[in-house]
Length: 341
Image (tube, rainbow, N blue to C red; front, side, top):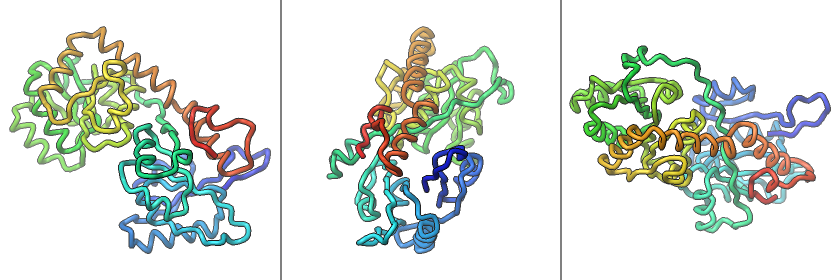
């Protein structure tokens, strides 16, 4: 990422990404130039060379290193640095992984999307003053009118959406739904291979009221409430997306959701291995619309205060400007981040 000056420049940064191919469409839509790389392993020389080539050509003011896999593919800066090389390196910690690769990649400052990950990095020995919280940007859901009939679902039934799940979470959902005989479920498959999942739904005798839906935002918009059924979620982005859609949310107490949700304040948390607890939480919320509305409104407020595009983008923009260019009059803390520069 290279800083650009000039009054006619529409944005303060020129951006270029070296990323996996599956990120291509989203980056292209955002106008970010890109080059693909496989990011296969620590000894992936192809990715390492492509990143090095881009750095040599761009000579950026700021290099963002997203996650440990990217950190492993970035060469440590030369010591002493070449004349004119003033690239600042910012690491983004995305999970409970090693942090040593960031140090080997020349990263001095880390940011993480949840306070729990910030604390994790500090506990592993990263200097406390060099790691801070920087919330992710979650855009408004772009969903219009949703017709339940499209997925063969009556309008007058209780409907719950599970926009995100893993294999264990899906199994837990099906077991819990046996205890909810009047409730329908829209399940977004965790992969495109649905043959085994359809067989599991039939075996659980739930084919009459469980539907597979391929659009998470659509599922949430049409439902009365949402369930996040993932055991391995370190960040909790699906929770924030449900808050944005103003739906009461029940989540398995994986690290990400547990770090975000205040239980019975802006959502509900349940044990990740207890189908009875999940069915009870869902049934109680459906039987108490006022409570569900209260949780949905509180979740929406949490989203607007911390994750809506305008505010979250301002925090990112300020942090990047401070790291990439001359000091600004404002401090990062003024925009809601505790990253120190």
